[in-house]
Length: 136
Image 1 (cartoon, rainbow, N blue to C red):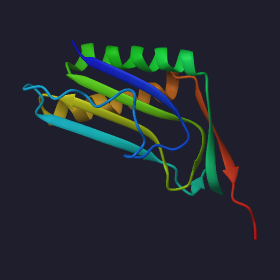
Image 2 (cartoon, one colour):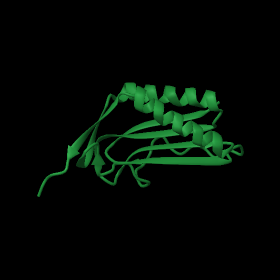
Image 3 (cartoon, helix red, strand yellow):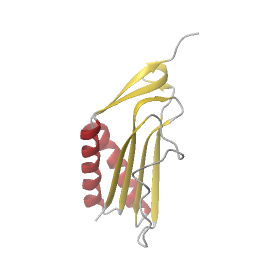
Image 4 (cartoon, rainbow, N blue to C red):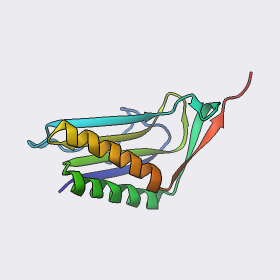
């Protein structure tokens, strides 16, 4: 059974941000740990931004993210999925999303990561609003 941990955090994420979700436990079966960080980029669509404001319906978003992670775990056989997503303002260059997949082999972890992200973007009640860069 896949370990699943999901957390919605106010503001940007960083390695120093404490996580109540904790890391995926190290077990003798883990041969690959794939970590993805979503970073806010300056160009959004056709314009330049200074930040993204994330609106999140937290209780539902956590349930949806957990459900997607459990589905991906059953489908791919990965051992663990840790998901953290920001709520509120995240400036350019800061991290707004982290997903870590623990698996026996690299290929299944990479495939599960891509599939999880695609589903999250379609299904999770998380919306981003660009904050335009102020003109000097």
